[in-house]
Image (cartoon, rainbow over all chains, first blue to last red; front, top):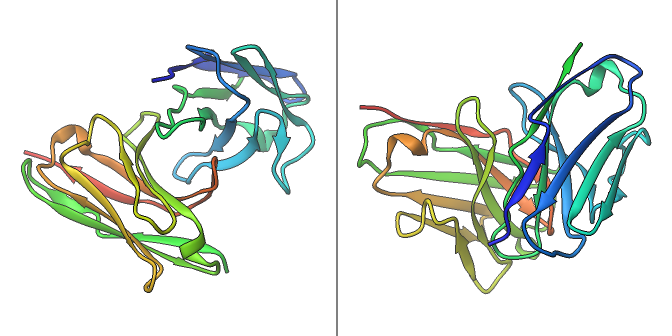
Length: 107
Length: 116
């Protein structure tokens, strides 16, 4: 089964910063990768599918990319509403693992 | 309104059983695959189980295989998760999700606590 390694586990940043979160697959995979945002006490929200496809209503400051087995979520200018935990997920196979999560904290 | 509403969580002892339900509304339930995802307290997300739209093909995480059973009743627009032989590490919030490849719709979650 494919394993997803997400880094960093915690990230301290300020409003306006450019933030990058990485997710690496244990083996070659397609671009069937999603990114989710979760705020405390709430269900996760789908941000990006197919590695770079922004879901409807998601601000354009969010973007996703792929280079080989490495996937990246970028927030171009961090806003107060963006402090949350982010998860990647590959959905190529019947087994749909999530990354370990990255908590974006206020610096 | 398009939504998923879970129910059935609770406080049980190890070895007990619980059945979770998820009522779907606002969309044609029978045309979507569905999954369950759980989250232990303070931990990350874990995919638990999935079921196809209509032919009942199911898949399970190794951690629940043989103990949990996912099912659906398309006539009632309801998803189920039968959980048997519960263990302390099954404790967490269980989310019902609409599976379109990624999970594009999530319920609010139902809390399962297994204590001894």
